[in-house]
Length: 107
Length: 121
Image 1 (tube, each protein chain N blue to C red):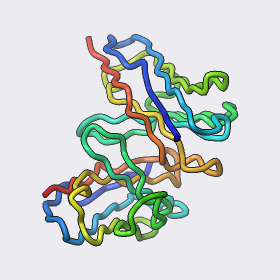
Image 2: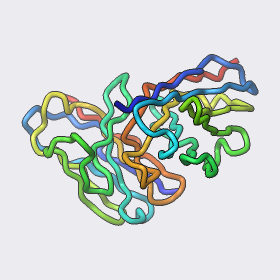
Image 3: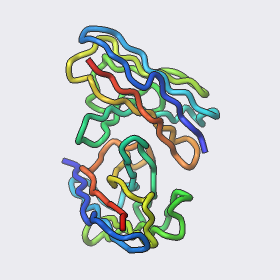
């Protein structure tokens, strides 16, 4: 199965800053079927990005995804207070679909 | 509004059985794939099983194959996960989830709040 490695594990930032999160796959992700989720404590994950670069419905344009093959990134251009959460990547191009361990953004 | 509501989680001994339910509303039930996903603190998310809208196609993670069965009841708009021969490592918060549209099986745009399964003696 494809293993997704996210880095860094934790990131300490301030509102207003720009951040780029990494998700690296152990094998090429078919069709760039890579998604990003945001998860806050006690809540289910929220889909942000699918197909590596397409924003899900209702997601602000400060969130953007890029990458292909084995290297993908999620960029948040200007951090808002509500963006401090854990971010997870998922590949769904090859069975079984798998998730990364997450990057936690903290103030 | 799309809603998915899980239930059925419990504390259960190893080797036991459990049935989880995912009651859905707000969309045409038979048009969508539905998945079960497990989350364990510190170990991330694990996809468990999926079933298509017509209920004739199912897939399972290797770790649950032969022990878990996913099914759906169109009269009740509900998806089930029948869990058997439970192991300690099956412990976790179980979510049901739905993709964003009918054309795809993945990824997961709509999620329930989850139901907790604890396997322990």
